[in-house]
Image (cartoon, rainbow, N blue to C red; front, side, top):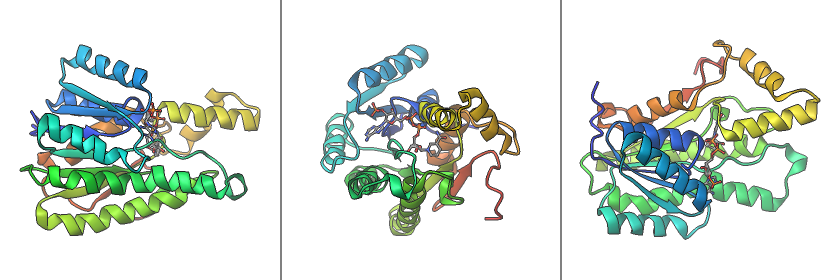
Length: 263
Ligand SMILES: NC(=O)c1ccc[n+]([C@@H]2O[C@H](COP(=O)([O-])OP(=O)(O)OC[C@H]3O[C@@H](n4cnc5c(N)ncnc54)[C@H](OP(=O)(O)O)[C@@H]3O)[C@@H](O)[C@H]2O)c1
């Protein structure tokens, strides 16, 4: 199936690694011009080069911190200047640290709110005028399967991501009349650097090995494995594409069936 992504301009934030990079790669494979982002300039340029070399893709990179209140406006000014429009916005940010109620100060909660919720709000606010110039505008927020079923030892993520899902559903109603689709993917365990670090922390706490912790997590899934970034990215590329033109306001869990609830 042709996803009709050729020459679309797609911004994927927090995309020098992990789910963001896999999504940028998939969109580039489908012919989109991708704008990637991350805080560490060296990693970002490596990702840009990797995409350009592997796919002969058109890649534009803007380094910066999406949790900083001024950065989304700067980012959209860059896109306005270079492309004068935007077709696809994928809002992503690094995940908050693992821990429980006693582990976090007010400042930790504030920081998590900035990165895990307010970054999505500000990116969408700043991108809206550019998206309104597109014939096929769409927004995808990357959240977490923890919205359906809170994960142990992840109180910041479990609490704050619910707000981003509320935002996504509200905006699907609010921006739908403007032709802008807004959806979210709720990923389950997917093998990225973040997950490798979380598994290392579990191994340290449990006096086990990282391989054992991966195995324990895999056993909880009906598929007996965790996901691959490409499996997430293919779904993301479909959801933001014009091929999904009547999908709006969907919170799609991509977790291999880990969540056992009916809804
Ligand atoms: N992987 C999973 O199993 C899973 C499951 C559920 C939810 N999620 C969520 O999905 C998101 C992506 O996860 P991931 O596994 O892909 O993480 P990852 O492997 O740690 O990659 C994170 C990427 O985001 C960038 N980044 C982090 N903070 C940023 C910021 N404030 N501004 C701009 N860029 C930033 C990082 O580059 P720099 O560090 O250089 O900025 C890196 O490119 C996270 O919110 C995570 O919690 C992941």
